[in-house]
Image (cartoon, rainbow, N blue to C red; front, side, top):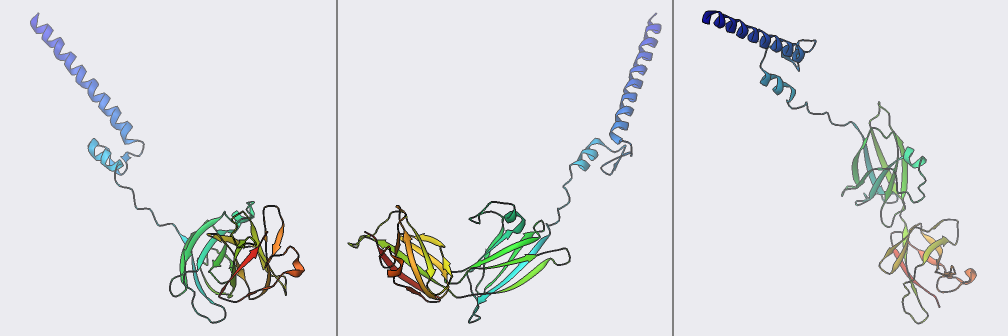
Length: 257
């Protein structure tokens, strides 16, 4: 009887071993997939090799291809290079599709010219039509539009900025006290249509810039929407012209009651 029980136990153990081997075979087929390889490692290699193969470092990504914009900026009259010129690049399609009267959207690149008046900028190839503006103190802002295609990945621009002047404007009372109420300012050329309302603040001073040399009627409008002309009149015919000189700042004050 003991021998009979021993044989039955031996057969049962063999059955268990066979079942384990069958399960292992099924798992190996599943891991090997239909091609018989996992990430380049043949079936039959150790599981550690398989895991290592799937976790190896990815190939380094190629650098994104870009358009190159090289700008040389100089004084249109003297040819002198203009360092510290602000260069802004905007996407024309974004500009066309946006209601953006203040020009705040679509920027894809910005930079400033070096001591030789040169700046080089890279722009993603997703932007094929670009508007480029050049802004420097005491020069008129210039704009250029460029287009790219796969055959031309770089564009070089030689831009001459026209010398301009600006007016610094203070508003004061008849007694000479400065007025800090909100007011706007503008300048219209006396002898032509050119004008500017490109106004920004420097402390208590309003600055009207991008003005070509010439004579201008400079005015302000205060909170009650009354317009006052330099030196201090509401009647335009009594205004005194303000002379704007290239590459210089003219400082004036307008008296308001």
